[in-house]
Length: 228
Image (cartoon, rainbow, N blue to C red):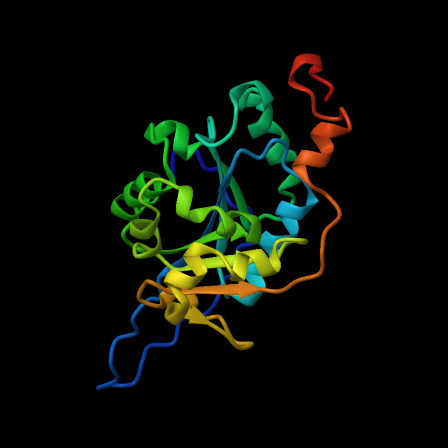
C-alpha cells in the first residue's frame, strides 16, 4: 500500500503457471509505468480525466497519479480552494480505476515539482515515472524552480491545449531541449527513455477549464458548502 494513494481496483485473474523450458533465461519483470499529473486541481474536471486516459493509452502507462498540490507557488492563495475540498473533488472526477488521486506532495512536504519528483524517484525506485502537463505549462516552464534539472530527471509528456500549441513550441524550454523531443505515432517507449526526453501529444480540445469554472462562480472558495 502506498501512503496517500487510494487502492487500485482491478479484477483478480488466476492463471496456471507453466515453468520455462530448461536453460531458458529468467523473465525480467517490467517496471511499473506511472504518469504524474501535478497541479492545484482547482477544481479537477473532465479535461484532467481525458488527458490521463490518453496518457494511459498512448504512452502505455499502467497508472496515472494525480498529485494535488497544497498550494501552487505561482498562483495566489486567495484564488485557491481549500486543499481538502480540491482533493475530494479530484477523487470524484477520477472515475477510471487506473487513476490514483494522492496527497503525496502534502505528505512529503515539498513545494516545488523538482523536489517532489526527486523524493518520489528515491522512494519508489522500482517505478518508471513520466511527468505530464498541458501545453500552457510548457510555455512557462522556464519560470519553475530548477526547471532544467526537472527536465533532466524524467521524461515529460506535454498535452496540446488550445490556444497554447504554437506558443508552447516557441517556448524557452522547447528551444532549449529541441533535440530531446520525441515525434511519431509510437510513444510507448518514452517512459523508459533516458532523460531529457519529451513529446507533444495532440488531442481533441476538451471544453472544460478550471479558470472558466471559477469565473462562472461554480467553484468559489468563499461560497463553498459540503454540497459543492
